[in-house]
Length: 321
Image (cartoon, rainbow, N blue to C red):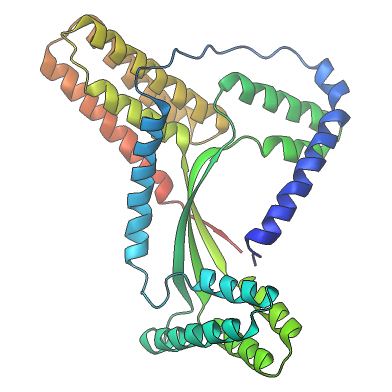
């Protein structure tokens, strides 16, 4: 089971220190490896990174909103409410904590009545971004360093090095066990009433550890590629400058798909090869100034296939405890 943010922050700080030690440890192995081939990154298109990121955030907000709409109002933010009670106890605001806890218990009783047969019930959904890497050459170097660490038998160093290989939007859905969570809240309330505040704190920390988290991961490079193709489709191809911009946007879309491939999102032979071929063909027909309806059909086909590919990740949630 997962303990929440304040403990995770301590863990992250500890791992940062361990990673720096690991990098020193493998320096000899790194020096013995062959040079990694370089992949040039295309120039940046006219559309700003802020605009693209805002569009992606909108896509993720819509997906999270769909999940949030399915959550009962009495369940929404249950975990956050439990954390607030715990925070009040640590701040010495015992009476305030007790009042908030009894309010939360009342909501839980309503949930039990409405959902007597459910084992787990969704109580919150959040979106977070992990954007650690955006360059294929850097990815290749990290992979090289990890291989060098494995070759030397430094497996923990390799694990920490590989943890850098992520560029994704994550939708986390939180679930509580309906059979035990409300009872845990009542037990904590009884401890507070009896003046056993330290025991109540421990009980709430343990209770938060029973929250199950289901994560749905969407690769950011795929989301970026989708936005670049969409922006390219808006260009006026009868204008030389805008036609060049469309080609540059497609170059960036192609690079992002190569980046997703290098990061291991998807299957190279099936997913990325067909998308890369579509981009290549679209660039060709733009270059030779094919008739407009053929270009529009090619844009639509590529956009549809990217959307299907992106949605396929949404159908593969990962459960965490």
